[in-house]
Length: 317
Image (cartoon, rainbow, N blue to C red; front, side):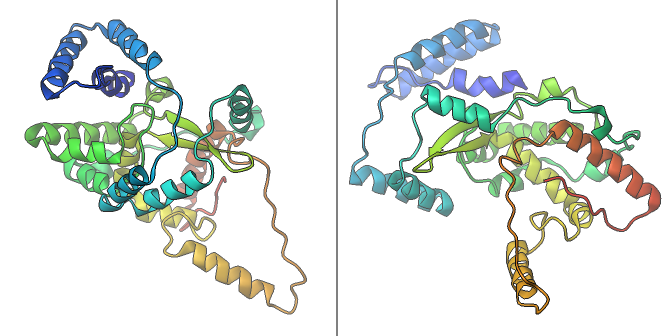
């Protein structure tokens, strides 16, 4: 997984020659491909570092023509929300410089995970997964998921449009790539995989947005992870909705936020309602013990299956 995630940024790193033409780019890519095949990954990494160190770091103010061009490009790609967010970020400070103060803020908002106390882990054996239910994850379903994927690039540098092009524009090679992603998705759904082997696949690019004032941390995950996730959810959608029930409105419920709004309004207008209290735990989502949460979800599902419960009314956010 680590090799797959670093392949693109190492091979496709643009050279420092601003006047390089298509022939120059092909020669550079051919040279780097030979180095990759000869396992000269360290040399490729040093070359990429040298280029990155010499790239301009100062951000200049975009003129009106550049803003119009970027906004129009995003709109034509169908990325309406990205286009609107681009204008919003431009008007509200955009991405903050990674100063020591901003870095400290990001580290405070994303603390290192810990094992947690032993008594929070429910006891039980992991369930036996029936691989047959994941046979629906095919090269075709991966391509369909890619069509529904939007957004920017994760740490490897390929955004949703880039991956969509790779999955559709290169004939048999695109079909092989989609088939490999489908095979990886089925394996992750049916086999135990060492979490360390998935570290690169699950990595996020953390950027600090200017809240003006304050810092809003945004984690942008790898596009292959988002594509595979959509393909898996398409197979398990009914199971997820049944498991979440009415306690988790974002788990595939149609108009969940609107339903919650109407429900709260109806409760507030009742004669026996005196007040509504809104509680927001500070940094609650980032401090959740994910190891314990994932472990307990598996155990809860075991007990629910044994008792033949029609719905699983548990949520951990």
